[in-house]
Amino acid sequence: MAAPLLELHGISKRFGQVVVADDLSLDVQPGDALGIVGPNGAGKTSLFGIVSGDLTPDTGQVRLGGNPITHLDAAARSRLGIGRTYQVPRPFEGMTVFENALIAAQQGGATRGRASHQLAADVLADTGILAEANRPAGQLGLLQRKRLELARALATRPRLLLLDEVAGGLTDPEVAQLVAIVQRARASGAAIIWIEHVVRALVAVVDRLVCLAGGRIIGDGVPSVVLANPAVREVFLGTEATAESFAAAGLVAGAGS
Amino acid sequence: MTTSTAALDRPATGARVRVTRSRRPRPFLGLVALAAVAVLAAMPALVGAGITAKLVDGFILLTLASMWNLLAGYAGLVSVGQQTFIGLGSYVVLVLAQWGLQPYLALPLAAVVCAALALPVSWLLFRLRGGYFAIATWVVADAVLLVVSHFPSLGGGTGAILPGIAGIAPLTRLAWTYWSALAVAVAALGVTYLLLRGRLGLVLTAVRDDEIGARSVGARVGWAKRIVFLVAAAGCGAAGGLLILSQLNVQAPSVFSVEWSAKMIFVTIIGGIGTLEGPIVGTIVFVLLQELLAGFGAWYFIALGTVAVVIALWSPRGLWGFVADRVHLRPFPIGYWLWVDDDTGAGAGRAEKGVE
Ligand SMILES: Nc1ncnc2c1ncn2[C@@H]1O[C@H](COP(=O)(O)OP(=O)(O)OP(=O)(O)O)[C@@H](O)[C@H]1O
Ligand SMILES: [Mg+2]
Image 1: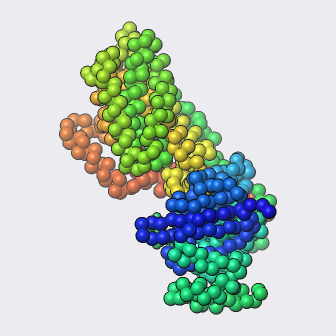
Image 2: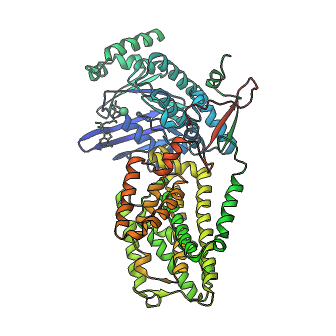
Image 3: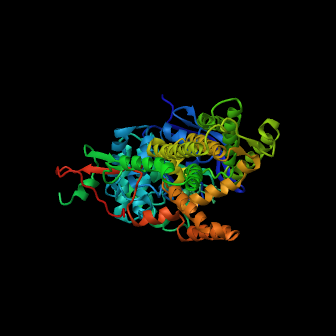
């Protein structure tokens, strides 16, 4: 059997007293769609940082397609096919929307000239912001920033797409549009890891759910099973709107099984 | 289909896209630039020696500011030690002239030597970030000053006279120096323009806006920074070479002075950091201010400082930023403008809202 697309082995990371990853191991297969949930401060974004190269783990190893990449920087990992979005969108504000996508297409996506123009335009069309192509990215509102964040990650032509709360703060129809974009990305062959508090959006796309708390995996498996897990329900108790989103997610998951 | 915008929101599989480097075609841009250079080249014949000498200083300043703008405005390398390469450039011309090379021919070599020396310097400096990097660039400049001052053949700390130039008539010499300075300034702007217009330019612009974001989309940021550092060393080295050619002697404490950094920072900030045009505007304003305030002694520095503070507070992106926000004026087409031919066959139509 081929090596998993992504392997995390014994990853630990702490910021002073705060443990964000505690001897954490995880495998993701090519084409997988994996959701990550967990309370605020669980270490979800930090885990993305460790995979994308923004953070160096204290111990442990990251492999992509069987090759160790722990020592590679974020740019090298992007070129190897790891694309990520940031929880707080960070567009290049002084560049146009098109230029934002273009640099991703040229650098991470390794395209040149006309091919890079076409790729950049295609991801903007796919994410629904082609009409804003020539606007300075600094002028965009939240929804459009989130779309641009997605477009930029897609323009690097990722094998593994890391989505950090792309649906947060959006209305239901907006979330539905984003879900459609992510589903298209998945259909094109990319594996997806998606961190999301909006569990409803998540279970519409993913077929595997991981629950993180205190830098540890406390649940991993089919979404409906993980969400029914008492340990998982425990860490969610008291967090906002959890009961509601669980109910909605449970309905969706139940209908599917 | 109701509007072309709705059509644009669909996945553009098959949609024909076209990219131009500015919103409107600029067929005469090259000609305008050429004419400007031609007029400037004729200046020594049109104006007196005093003005010609001042223009030389202006070109040196423009070169320095353009290089500092690349470093700090784009690559995030806030150097306060570019005088390292100004000084080295001066001394390369001196040494080559002492060896018998015609000083004007030594000028391009000063740029090359400085770029070559910048490589090992970058290995040292690039380990440091932010404020530490800035301080270290200054430390390097002072260290090089100490080393240079130790060589009696270089005039020690007191200075050395440029040989091989005494035979040339003063006015001829001034004209040659002027044309050299013009050539260096045009080359500095030209290289900056080409650098920013190419693939690397997109990377540098992204680094200007967000370095972490640039890395996350695969940009080799370290590589881009190193290239900028070498280019800036070459430009500052050439400027240093011009200094000794215009002054006919060199004094180590003066060419390695941190005042040069203060000047290039000042010019870049008032003109507009992170824009290609900023250093040009800044240089013109600086030279004019210098002329206006020359008679006021110490007040000159106070007035200059006040102007800088006022401009920095009132328009953080300098005078050019203030202008560019109000009129869509882009003399240097380095951006990308996307045109999508919609499938009604109506030709290139693009939503252009929000640009001006
Ligand atoms: N660079 C850093 N320096 C210090 N502490 C950090 C740093 N990054 C994250 N932390 C801390 O680590 C913990 C985990 O942060 P992380 O962003 O990974 O959580 P998260 O699961 O993504 O949370 P959220 O749901 O709020 O986005 C938090 O307590 C955070 O304050
Ligand atoms: Mg987070």
